[in-house]
Image (cartoon, rainbow, N blue to C red; front, side):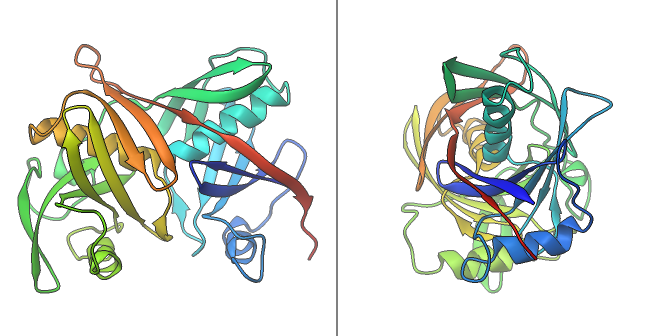
Length: 276
């Protein structure tokens, strides 16, 4: 089976073109291929598939075999993959995901270097995120994380995110708190956790604990959720640069459309064959 290794700001995935390949058990395959020492090594497996609703369909499987609704870094890579291989001629097209139809726009001079993605509207109602409890929004609410109280703001960008503001993203309890919050009873489908330090009105520093992955170098949907949370908590403007360990993303939460737009890079690392 042929595959391509790609990454968006160090958030690396294995991409399989299912127009040409047949993947029968993606959950099991994701576990094997994503293993850093015994497989290819990645933050997950992405299948690029035909769609009846859009130009392409994207399915994402985490290293633990669970299926994710959406990934901003992966969708940029899919956009680069299909455009660079002339699977589509247009610079703007649609990709079907479990979170709905995502609309990327590639920016290229020959091969694609940057992709701008319309990520849609943020979801703030707790039951739609989803979260346990009564109706309403979760903005600067207190959560007991294994005996440590943290203030959380929760947003869905097609997948669930819990945003926590801190004075520094480099603190010893990062992994401990990330794991506890990811698996907290409040979140029936588990949750991605972002720790955020606001540098100024237009710059944000972020560190992410991804559901089913652990710490990763970047998270596109997480950066979008963080930008929304900053506006909701009156900590930054609607047009921000988010600094992640793997690099920067430009995020705009448009006041007129209520849509969130993400712009960032996508890179191909290598191609290979998987033999079982």
